[in-house]
Length: 281
Ligand code: PAF
Image 1 (cartoon, protein in one colour):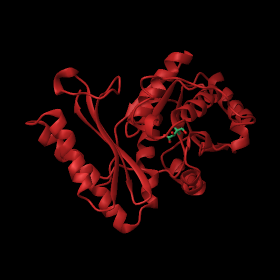
Image 2 (tube, rainbow, N blue to C red):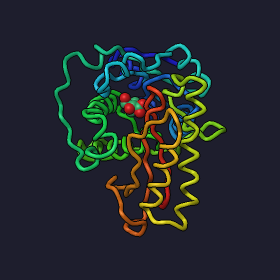
Image 3 (cartoon, helix red, strand yellow):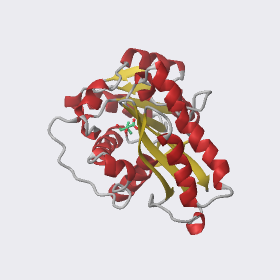
Image 4 (cartoon, rainbow, N blue to C red):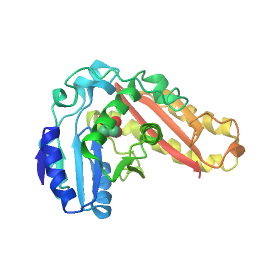
């Protein structure tokens, strides 16, 4: 496994692969890697000749300075995990490499970016689009892999690729959960043992709501989840929305479309967690 810290180094490594006619898979990450990331890398390794993984905590997508400061940074352990799952190239640049000057680009993915995470974290998706587009220009991958846990991000990346006419196939990969159901997230390492226990309520509420939804209206199902969260001490709900999986707009009835997803965001103590569940589609 090779480690590149500059775009030039990365491009020279990739040029050698391209000269040999090899296909390139790409997994962008912010590090603090877990088995969810490992599953993306494994899939890329199976589907491509060469797999590149970026490890970069992107400052422009954090709307909360403390969140950026506290975001876990574990490059050494990340490289170990990546070596174990047969990644070929790790790209771990400094902030100045990716942002030699301020990125002034303003994207609009409306209406995808005006709801849920976009509404709660102003500027977040603009920052995601800034870094992911720069990474795509640097890596020029054939395929890029994103987890469905960041459901809205995945929809926005697809839209960004469409708007910028970038020639890459975006591959969405299923959420990977701990044995007890908690969706894997780099932020889980920041939870205390007690918070970790409370956070279990999130996936339990979502899975219970799948059953509940079979015999109840959409608004009753939304209330069902909201109530479970409200009744759990230490969880502070930001939103639970049941949306059209393509447009991300809130639905009123189950029969409005064929692709229906429930998306949740909440604080568990000071740690913000997201998760989602597919009802239809
Ligand atoms: O999902 C993430 O980890 C980040 O948002 C991404 C796509 C690596 C961009 O910084």
